[in-house]
Length: 422
Image (cartoon, rainbow, N blue to C red; front, side, top):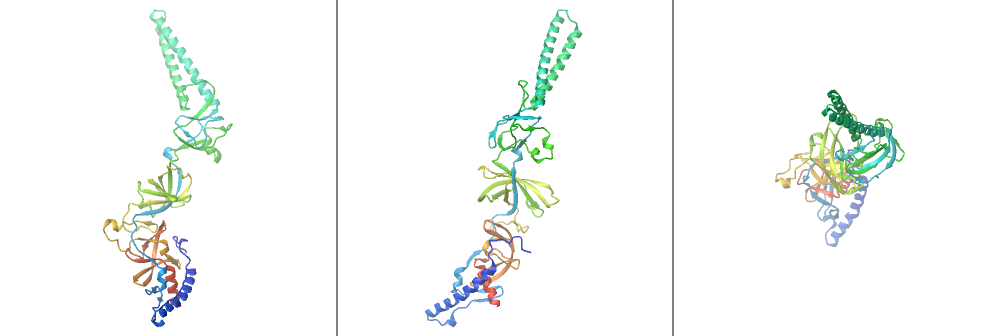
């Protein structure tokens, strides 16, 4: 079964071996001819030596021009590579439904338009809202009439022309009418209206400031306050979605192996296939308390800065979580090492290092590199690899910091070892 970290940047070994055999066959006569030109016997020319897993290349061999090297070093930062999905930031997002039943009469905004809190998004003709307006208007009139009656009876009582019980009854009636008016006005306030005529035109208003990022409403459309409970996906859609697209949430699927490495507040680096050269910065905010029984992953949430407006909601992205953990790698997907150059301490034996992806090649579902053990002598070493990022791959075992690794020409050396066995 192929290793999960096998990647297309590793060239095909079979083709490289054929190329190496041809190169060896062509280069050896050239090298020998060069020696004859200098007056040296052909048999004194240095020879290539290869056996299983080891290659010796003389200093003056032309194959040296095809080799490049790099000293293995610990990674400078700890990174966990994950996948995520961008969604609207719930702290700055509201999905607007109608609180009354009615028919859409006018739409005042379009998608992409900025609105302030309290702006009217649309108006709709509503019998229920008209009744609420009528109740409020009637309660206002009843209270004013009760107030005048109480005032008149109070004046009559002062001159001895009215009984005290009549005044008390008027006071009680006035308090009742006052309470009824308060109830009716509170109902209107819930609809976003405090005053106005009885016209039955309900104004659907923005609950908060932001940008209209979705609009699912048309003129003449019938809406109901309970449509969000329907089973039809079209009816469940909100009439408007208002959000701040300059800040998006990213939802991560975290495996059980990685849960212990994550803490709220860790930095995120988000990459999208739409912008392969851009890195968007963010923060991890929340880690879920339970695993999904189907995927066996935990949902984690962070936010990402989208000041340029390039990222879009529902994009799938790659996310690098910058870990706080120090020491050796904790799993096959995580690099977690402290840079020895900054700490002044040598790396731990067997700790992870970073190498260019071209240094690693695959054979029989395993990964290998060539390490220079002495000038001109190279040995093949099996390695375990971790996360690949920006053209570099974490080698979690098989190579230690300070070893000189072949980064270009590994497959040529491998082909030489194969030829040496034949």
